[in-house]
Image (cartoon, rainbow, N blue to C red; front, side, top):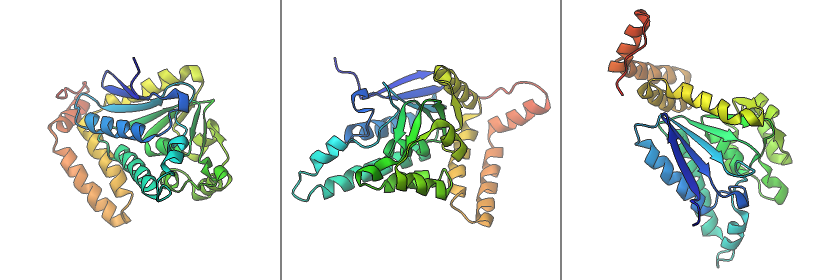
Length: 263
């Protein structure tokens, strides 16, 4: 029996999605993009899930778009123009959905995360990486500038560093990715599972409603001028303060006891 292209497992409020196409290094084919998008939508309304982890099966996290599939798309009468627009639009919508996902999303990275695979890491809210992982936006090496991956990359790291990666096509080690702010933590390969679980469980242990409203505000305020951002986030704080569980959390802190939050 053929295994699913995307596998899901749930434990203690953490849902793990595994890109399961190791033969092509978990490339973002149309089917893979559709599978991830559908899973994100399904999980977004699952109140039992507080954190989402993305990982890759086999020897890589994700090698970007499926170039063999894209080459087949070029055989259309228009040279592939309609197909290319469709696949890039779908990919952009999936990356945006990750940022709009109510639950925090953690990339668990091993092997390579390149081109749209690096974009996938940059689109996640946090990332934990193996020391052996490598990152890059290397499309320029085959004559294709990584313009859509650039959107997420330039919102994660310094402009000059991003431009260097985009124009040289160089791959960087995990340590450099950490220095640039692309990943939160780098650990030995044997510790990748435990380090990711530790981060996911720590976040999953917080009040889900507060994290949800906070994630939305995090990305929204970043696009606003300073005064507008303070006005908006002040309104978010007021709404958050009115939550029953937030009132309980503050009371518990003052009374030096664990909070009793609604399940």
